[in-house]
Image 1: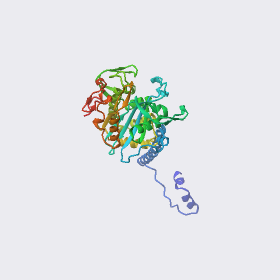
Image 2 (image 1 turned 90 degrees about the vertical axis):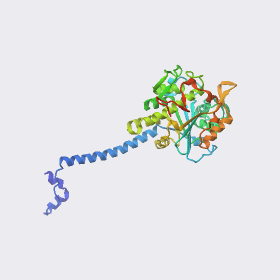
Image 3 (image 1 turned 180 degrees about the vertical axis):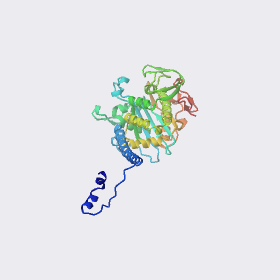
Image 4 (image 1 turned 135 degrees about the horizontal axis):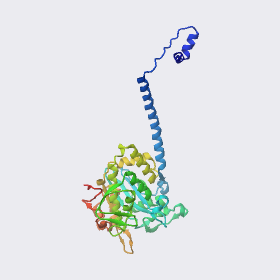
Length: 390
């Protein structure tokens, strides 16, 4: 009988000795009890599998991230780190045409930094400042170790355009050049290329912006009427790259568009409700980690998550946008040169965790460019989406 075998070896041994079995037959489980037990095992299994899946997700996302050891490349000859809780990050947009970026045309001279911004997060982590460095700025580029294509040889210092630093020595040379210009130590480095930027915007579901004039630029494949738009990845990339479709066609005008787009992007990230949708959160994390290159101290999901939490409370109105004070180079109208007395004020404010004073940018060529009213400033802020940032 089933009942006899269920009692086990101990009860059977006692029977063979002639003794009375002390084990009791277990009553068959009722339907309700079987259901409860099944539910308990299901929950336990889900927890176990959930833990495994979470580990896999972190492993996968960590594997997405490319890291560059900036500290090892630059050594100790760098500006002093100010341990006051503030943070400075060099953010670069690369114009590489390799891989998925090939459709954006050829770049015979190699990849350069198409966009460069120093993001300063204040000590309290409730305000931020962005200083855009025009890529055409003529600077004293320091000596850098050349990339592998140049044999890794030391490239001597040179008076050159800012964006050539990335071409010469990659991220490490870009960071070294910014630190040489500013006297501010960069705590971290973030880089995104064209294809990665486009994927990121599409994963977010687009970014809403209002333009007050039509933009038609065949070079950046952008064709927008005046009005409010939900820009997809391709359109967003076109907007931040366009030069000849707006204003005077200068890089300074394009920087203003980039700054306006950045504010709109921040509002979009804050409005999509990532934490209410695990799938949306995972999709964005998967795309973001695949799209960026970071310094080696930031190339993990945990560290990027920590940075995201630090930025979480900062809204678009909490960010001061500044373009490095420059004037057009009298020797070459396609280049700009720094106004030393004013740039010193900009970097001093960043170093001392203070807002950049208006006097630092007054009279700058960047301050005079309004990109033809394409995006309109309202009380010092830019319209992003269908509502004004008050």
